[in-house]
Length: 431
Picture 1 (spheres, one colour):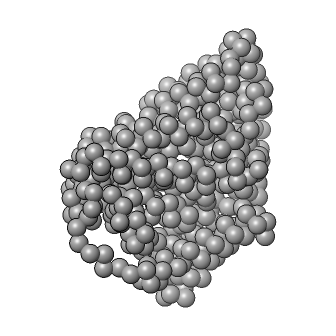
Picture 2 (cartoon, rainbow, N blue to C red):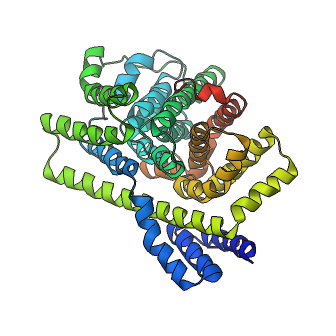
């Protein structure tokens, strides 16, 4: 009876998600109703009273609002505004140099943001008009920025990785190290795609942009030194062991505020806006986490997690077969769900299975984030695509932008294959 209730709960959850019920409410409702059916109202109410506290009372979660505050302050005060111009100084000589510059500028923005949506929105406003003026096909220019935005959740500080590390009780610092490797590999792969398109289709990506670069190295350094300082402080202190990943959030937020005040860019209105956006985003993320924690308890009590493990043991899947199944599941979920919901719904089911196969949870965390970010640029609900459509509606339609990311999706799938077949590559910095 318990197992049947658990399976029914999974079906009800999927139905609710299909009808666009908010992920947090769907998770909490199914968990509460399921436990009530299995063990009575008193146990269900007791879980509802205790689970939110048990999830939220984790020191590592305090990094989430701190890193978000750092990103919002940096964005609203213009600390990241010069990244694209600075990247052009280094990369514009390459075929498709403007597009390559936008990819690496996105990587730099990721270091003070942690959000792929924010990364796509910020870079889209700056880079797309300049690329179109230089002769890029608008759909490809928009697709480049949409794809580049996905690096925002791979390069630390990644909010997705912090939530994953907290949920799985693994080292956030080591997950960050794996994220740096795959984030840089992704930026390199995207750049190769751009240069190949430039070589074979100069009508889509011009091999050489016209016009002189009226931006010197000295000017570039003056524009981006705040981001460089923040990056050195956060990553240097975190990876050298001076402070933890959790403490790095507070130091990063404090550093962004201090630099903005010294540059006289932070006024009361801007600070209020940054705080409100931080509170809103943090609240939406944490309530999904509470729902996922309740769902984990529900699946455990009903025996679904154990049944899935027994079923896979009976099928005698190999490592590669298991990974193929997991990759397919996340790619399908990415078509319809936002990353946090997709991750927290599936982890309670996958984690017990992964432990039986001896899979590193640090490596798996990086893989999950990469797969979920692919979902940000796949139809029909690729969030980055809609963001780019909002900031560059005069240049391309939704269909055009989806076409523009096609080659980047191919590169992403090749990176996923590399991660599956050579997991030690992801862990090269954390070993």
